[in-house]
Structure formats: structure tokens, C-alpha cells
Length: 469
Image 1 (spheres, rainbow, N blue to C red):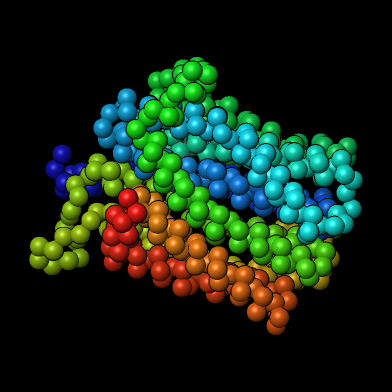
Image 2 (image 1 turned 90 degrees about the vertical axis):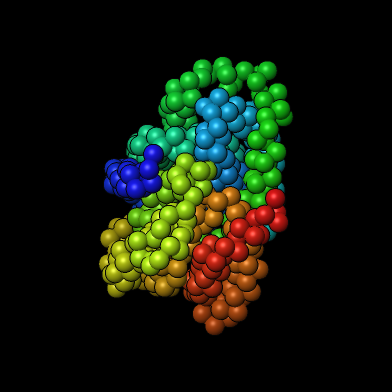
């Protein structure tokens, strides 16, 4: 197909997917934010909620480690590359990855949560919860991690085939199920109802997405679940060596990135009860601007992975360049994304900062939180928002690196943050107390964004990637 016809058609499909997916994804993310608003109303900020949010952050970290930031990020471009060869190659790749997950995931989750349980004894000597309640909460989040890890693999398959809408719809339905379960269970189970609700929400999504993946791949459930398939596919498939190597890099990045909020909460816990809960409530409001851009990231990663896999011509004349100088279509598309985020999100973030106190009062001011607590959360939110724009741009550029399979750059950026964040936390906490933690996060966003951008647009990421391979 001629390039002049292919590129407008590709941009039209990309725009169509973005416009149709964004409202659905925003509804799903709004449901997640509503969950936190209701939790603040129903449970307030106590030692028990600190325990819940600590393990929720551990669970989120493990999900990122095992799937969302590792397998998902690797599988989408890898599966796009396999599809460029044949659909049969793509099916074998999926079978191998799914078999690997069913083999190692349950034991891995139990081990990692067990380690987190041991570490938590240093942070939570007095949680005001009974031992049985603590055990139920920890076991519940273990199941939550295992099920959610499988869901992310299924989502990666559907996103590669550009079937974006079903995961977005199920995410919204999941929020309703979680809210209803917590509401019904809280008089009887109290805080234990929260992990139970999260498990049911993930199970609903896995069942629906699994059936859709089987239909798209033209496979039956037994092809993915049969014991013989599990024991042989992931060891014998050629792509598995590449998948595992790249997953190790991304798991390193996930560990580095995921440890930062855990370190923040751990250091914040030294400042007294409710400190962790206040940080979490502020961060959940930061999810609003992240949602407005984050809903586009699966579409962009799938589109950019297709460009990087060779589905489009490798070089094109940039419309704003003179002469015959040529650049990659991938760089053109990424640059447009960066400009769009700066233009659209700059005014939004400014307005969000100005009206942060009314927003906090609207969402959290109808329950157990005190007026002083609400003002403290609004102050923390304002600091986080100072570094939000470079953070949003970094998230976009990371997807561009993933499309090129430049995983070493992503790992390098997260390691820089991991080293500097605790140091800055400690320094700033000496002056501003709990506010020093968001100050560290906000200020680090600027040099990290610059590093990722220079690596992508200068081409140094390609050289580093070639050395890793």
C-alpha cells in the first residue's frame, strides 16, 4: 500500500480508537476513584486503614512487577512482531506465555506476599486489628495479585489485536461490583470486605476476557489450560527466551518504580497514624489527570508496536521538514503525543491545582475525616500536582521505548529515581515533615522526564538496546 494512503488511514484508525475508548476508560477509572471516596467515608483514616492501604500498595506493586509493567509491556510489542510473521506464530506465543503464568504465578505470589508480611511487622506493630483479620486481609490480597496478573496477560492479548473496548467496559462493571460487595460486607466483615470485593472484581474480568481471547485467537479453553500444554509450550517456544530476558529487565524497572511508593509509605509511617492514609488519598486524586492521559496509553502502545514491528514504512518525510531529510513515523507520532499532552493537560493541571481544596472537600469531606485532615490532604495534593506534567509526558515516552523494545532505558530511569527518592525524602522530611515526601516525588519528575526524552529522540536508546541484546 502506498505510504501516502497508509499513514492517513492509520491515523484515522488511531483517532477513532482513542475517541471511542477514552469515555469508557474514564468511566472505569472514575469507578476506581469512587471506591476510594467511599472508603474514606465509610472507614476514615485509622491504623486499620493504614494496614489495608499498605497491603493494597504491596499488591499494586506485585501486579506491576509480575504483569502490568513487565509481561504486558513486553508481550504487546512481542506479539505484534509475531503477528507480522503469521497468526500461527502469534498463537504459539500466547500459549507459551499463558502456560508460563499458570505454572509459576501461584507460588510466586505466595512467596512475595509472605516477604511483605514479614516486612510489615516493622511498620505496623499496632494495627487495632485482630490476628484473624490481618491474616484474612493478607491472604485476600495474595489471591487478588494472582488473579490480576492473569488479567493483565489477557488484556495484553486483546490490546495487541486492538480489541480495546471489552477490557474498558469490564473495568467499569468491576467497580460497581466492588462497591456493592464492600457495602454489603462492611457491617459483617469490616475491613476484610475490601480484599474480598477486589477478588470478585478481578474474577469477573478474567472470565470475560478469557472467553474473548479464545475467540480472537481461534483457540479453545483446553488449548490454554490443558496440563500437557502447560508443561511443554513455554519451554519449547522460540519467543520465550526473548520474552523472559525482556521481562527480567522490566521486572527490574517495576521493582525500582514500585519500591518508591512503598518507601514513601514506610518513611511516612514514622510520622504517626493516618500519615499513610493521607498520602494515599492525595495520590488517588492524582489519578484523575493520570487517567485522562493513561486511557490512551494502551491504544498508543499497540499502534506504536505495530509501527516498530514493520507494519508501516520505516521512513517518511516529516511534513515540517524541508528537503529530503527523513525521520521515523514512530518519532513523528510520539512527538505529536507529547505536544498534545502539553497543550491539553497544562491548563487542566493549573485549574486542578487552584481548586484542589474544593475537590478534596467534595470527595472526602462527608465522612470520618476531620477538617484539618482535609486541609492536609489538599496540601499534599498540591505538591504532587507540581510535578504531574513531566510525569504524564514520561509515561507517554516510556510506551514509545517499549514499542521499540528499549527496555534498558526504562530500567535506567527507574533506578535513578529509586536511588534519589529515599535520600530526598529524608532531607525534605527534616524541613516539611510529611510534605517532604510529595516534594521529593514532584521535583524528581523533571530530570527523569528529560532523561527519557533525550534517550528516545536522540537515538541513544537504540544503541543501548543493541548492547543489551
